[in-house]
Length: 149
Length: 149
DNA sequence: GCGATATAGTTGACATGGAAACTATATTCC
DNA sequence: GGAATATAGTTTCCATGTCAACTATATCGC
Image (cartoon, rainbow over all chains, first blue to last red; front, side, top):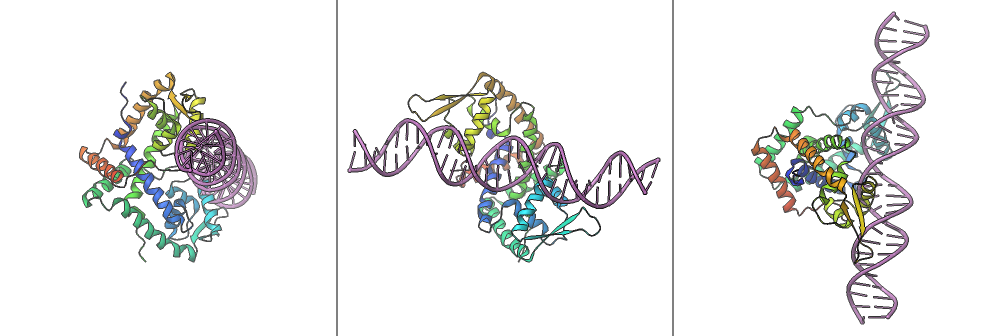
């Protein structure tokens, strides 16, 4: 029975490079006291209305449990605030504090830098093909952020 | 200060798709009683000489601690065997059992299927560009499997 | 040949995320 | 309006990985 090489799979290369990109970014934001997951949540709150944790969970691809804990950490760091909904006794919203809002552009610059560091050497054409193909996969397969809970 | 969109980053799309590919594969191999990490280790032992855990750690991008635990699990499942080195009192080697060896082609078929499921719709050209670009990044940046311990 | 150091592997403490149980509040339908 | 059910969020338990300490053995430099 033929056992194809790991490196024959596009998924293998995707994961390999993706892991490196994420790890490098994690090291960059670490200096600012946040993790990658925290960055993504902060980024999502940036310039948005106060947002329900469940909505963030959907869009982040995390379970509500995970967002609950993530929010705890960001709360403890003073980067977000939690507010009870007035209309619904169960619901809450999360929003950036001034400190959180000030941090986002700094982290965004690191994200830009990190992306450039890995992909700047590609031709514009390559970047377009990759982005286009990946977008198409997401589109066609209707990929939503992963866990559905 | 400009805060670029997350989706402006190639790294974002890579991670997004990569996570989905891995998750889908995880669900497939789950039926065979193994995890993705276990599959990669089994694949690495397939058709190879008995191999030292530390060597596997290097190539898998895991710490030795992680490989130690991973090997424990595979041992418990009867898919690999551990042998003490004769020449070096510290060293061990891992190798597939017949059961492990028999499982690899089955898992490999699932891997092929999974990759096809996600990427078959891309044109040959797109696949070539993506694989080429990612390989080039790995090459140029000298990316080795990640954790160095 | 032996003390200092390096290396192989294991282990324990910690972090983070998923799954599912749980609490509290809302909604639906009779 | 009240029981059944749905929904928001939290919490607990488990899996799996890192990091750093630890044990045992090898090797190096003198």
